[in-house]
Amino acid sequence: MTAEEALKPAVVVAGASRGIGRAIAKVAAQEGSPVVLVGRAPEQLAGAARDVQAVGGQTFALELDLVSPKAALRLQDFLTDNGLYCDTLVNSAGYGLRGPATGLPLDGQLGIIDLNVRALTDLTLTFLPAMVKRRRGGVLNIGSIAGFTPGPNMALYYASKSFVRSFSEALHEELRHTGVTVTCVAPGPVETEFLSRSGAGRAMLFKVLPRLDADRVAERAWRAYRSGRRLAVPGVSAKIVALVARMLPSAVIVPLIGRLQRRSADPCLCGSGLKYADCCGKHWRTPGSSDRAAS
View (tube, rainbow, N blue to C red):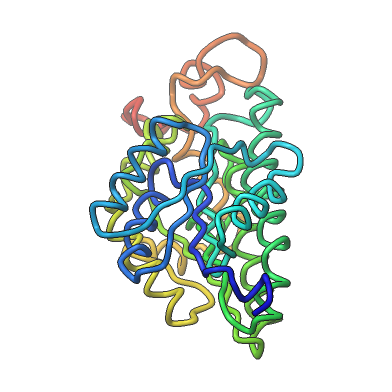
C-alpha cells in the first residue's frame, strides 16, 4: 500500500465557522466521511465542530487565514499529517461590502478579491489535479445570484461572485469525463451574518427578496453537488431573479440594482457633503414619492 492509499477521503469546508459553510459541514458529515473545518475564528470553529459531532460526524479543525501566504499548502500538510486527503472541497469563505466603490476602504475591497477570488482559486487548483488523478471527488463553490449581473453599490462582491460562477462552470465542462464534479450553488439572500456584516441587509434589494434558511440551502447545495450538477439556484425567488437578470439588457437591470442597493442616507458622491437623498437623489424622485422609494 502506498502512502497515498493509506490516506482517508475527507470533506474539506473552507469558511466553516459560520453561515452556509457551517451548515454544509453538518450535511456532509451525515455521509460518514471525516469533515475538516477551516476558518479564522477558533470559538466559532469549535461551535461548528460541536454541530458536526452532534450528527455523528468526525471532525478536524484548522484555524487558518485563507488569504495568508501558502494557505493552501498549509491545509494540504494538515490533511496529510492527519491521515487524510481532500476528496470534496467546499469553498464557502467570502465576504462583501455595501456602498459605492469610490467611498469604501480600498483595503477592504481588495480583500474581497483576495478571499472570494484568489483564495478560492488557490484551493481549487491545489486540490483538483489529485482528484482528477484519482478520478473521483469534486468541488462545491458557493456563489450567489449576485453573480448573474453587475451590482452597483456592491461592485466588488458582485464581480467576485460572477467570477465564481464563470470559473466553476468552465471547470465543470473541462472535467466532464474525468469522474470529478465542480458545482456552483448560487442562492439568493440567506439568513446569515453576511447581511449585517456587509451592510447589505439595510439595502432595499435585500429587504424585498425573501431570505433563505442556511440549512435548507446547504441541503440543496449538497444534493446538487452529489447529482453532478453544473449550477444550482436554490429558491423560487432566486431562480426568477437569475432568469430576469439574463433576459433584461444591462441598461435596464444595472441601474435598477444600483438604486435598490443605495440608501437615501448614503453620502452623495458628487462631493457636496450632503446625503444622497438631499442632493443628486432628488433627480430620481417623482412628485409624491417617499424617501424610502429613493433608497
